Image (cartoon, rainbow, N blue to C red; front, top):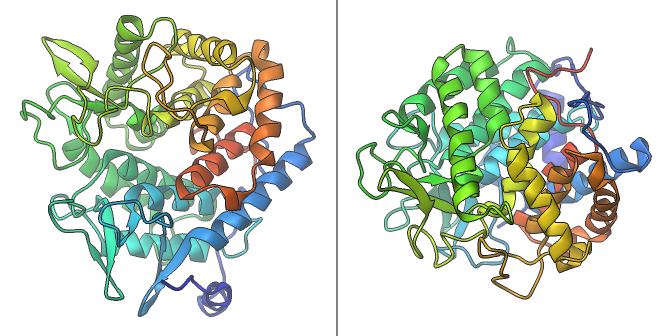
Length: 423
């Protein structure tokens, strides 16, 4: 698999005409909820750290489609451990990449060309079930990028990828406007309409696992993946579309968070990878419910939760998960003796470690959750230092992508379509 040549993007920019005005060039020092803290580090130093990691990330993970230089995807399987072993891209990574391009515009003169190429890749691999949503996985078959077939089922959608791509389109509309070749806002609206039908259970008004789940499915219909609880993006969907379904989903999502927290993790704040709906209640999923024997634990999906949930408080001030987040922050500091390197890559909900090693995919999100209170200032400072000491080459796609997105929040640069800095 050849990496997308750096000069190819430059040529695309040169020959695509004048780029749109960049309304919110990086860095944007966003005003967060009163009381939210940043690391006690010079703002310019933090901005430069984000820029450096972004440069590394682009070089490591952006690929062009063979024979289609106007399509770019985020390569996620450098370890060769995904199934199938020739898998190359997932909608999750495409959402990460599109958000990063929109946030880093201004610093990166190629950002809009990269974004548009990633958008065209999304168009080429839409879900076979729901037009406008994205098939969740693609593979390289003898040099051709194709949807992953059954039994992997990569041609239908995953909710988190759908949410991130739609949110990235809303960012692009604010960043560059929608009067150019791609109407970002129109495309975002199409995705939001599709998600409201296909990714939302219309009986419970909660997020489903993807468009492949039927509302009435006894096993999966009312199940949730807590790392899909991307609440601030849902808030932006509500404000952008005026569709009340998103406000209802936000309310019900907060209810699920607190039900699982109060009943299963009141001392830790940890939430499981997946939750089932049984006997009129949400419960941690049984082992191998969908992916692994850790499906009911705080594992590789849930590692993103401190970032996903805390970001909504940081931007909106919504306090409905604040008790859960404070419990989580207190527990992780105490259980690790305030040492980031002691954060393990997975836990049972009572705090028992699942493994004896660490991973940045678990460490970086705790920096975002630490921002919610000045009582976490020393911990946040320590996390910032530790996270930035780890070279990109020592981590994989998942850890580096999560680290970079979290650092945009932690450095004070995560603006949203409904929380815009002044132009």
